[in-house]
Length: 285
Image 1 (cartoon, rainbow, N blue to C red):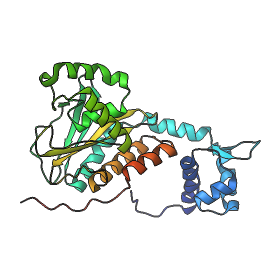
Image 2 (cartoon, rainbow, N blue to C red; image 1 turned 90 degrees about the horizontal axis):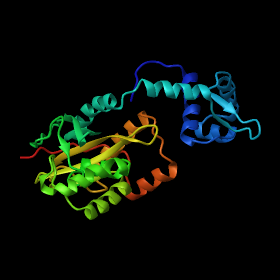
Image 3 (cartoon, helix red, strand yellow; image 1 turned 180 degrees about the vertical axis):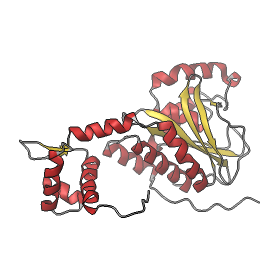
Image 4 (cartoon, rainbow, N blue to C red; image 1 turned 120 degrees about the horizontal axis):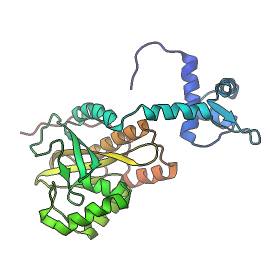
């Protein structure tokens, strides 16, 4: 996000030092920290003295390494208490839908399963019966499969067993498939970081769904792209998949989610996902 106006350079330099500590996720020696923040060690030391006085940073007496202090924790807790994941996502998807030109939905895990709480139309409108309150099946939709992949299994299992028992008689969008098929799709979703459907549950319509996590690593909601098969590319290297993951990872970061570096690297290697702009879509004839 670009913020207009003249700021205070020393505050911004101090922010780079704090950001480097957050990104590292471990105590750092002065020289390591200075390198990560791209400042001279002597300059970093002066900032760290002030930060220690404010208890934003503390220094281990034995090793000399620096780490975030108790006041940094208090700031984080205050942020979390005042932040609503759904409100954050609801505001963000308006711009995202305009950017990608597709329908974007927000779903939470409700009493009856994966439940749509917001539908945002894109410039390329999709004629599907999706509205607030619609429940998506676990096995038959990208949204349901992403919840199956990233929510605790004990939460999903009761709904899944009922869905498989009822089969075609389930109340919700998406025909039920088998547990074996779901297990394979869940494994793929965990590897890629998102779930997909091609030309189902509505013929000619694709879906890509990705999770949003909070500071504790708990999945809070799912963001789903919905579009015609000739428009929405569900491939792992597609611009649509890249854009969706960049969007959900940004939301997760704003909620305090900080995945382990090795897990994040593994996900990136499997999907080769990087933030990328979405090309302007050609309108269908």
